Length: 191
Image (cartoon, rainbow, N blue to C red):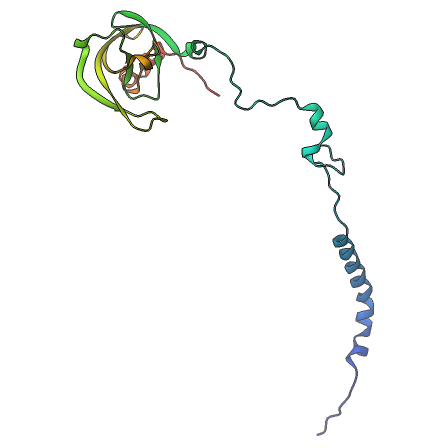
């Protein structure tokens, strides 16, 4: 059996398909080429005007005033912490008592402490910005106020670091319990 060999040109066979799709392909490539050739105009993100950036926006320069960074207001130190202090008796002297959540033990000033109150124990203290820890002597301190009478240990600070307040530490506050803590220091909400 012999086969017939038919020679035909593939271009002719598929010419109708090419004609149908060639118009579509050429239009699509022209659109893409036009999109790539055009440059996008600069536009301000604030006012949407062309030809300027947000950093040079005239509307922002007119509406914004001077911004303060790390602006320190002149408020007395006592006004800022007065809502968190109560007046109590520390070793028989009336003194403001401040609940300090950053200390483990209470911190008392050296001014009204007698040598016999010192226990002979010492505690190492290192604050956030100190390079090395320092040691402070411990003393027995008697507190009296809305909480009743309480004897606790407190670190005695040097005269230079004395702020004139007794700082109530976490150990003493835990000893007082939740009910007595509310009597001494009202609940505060911080945003």
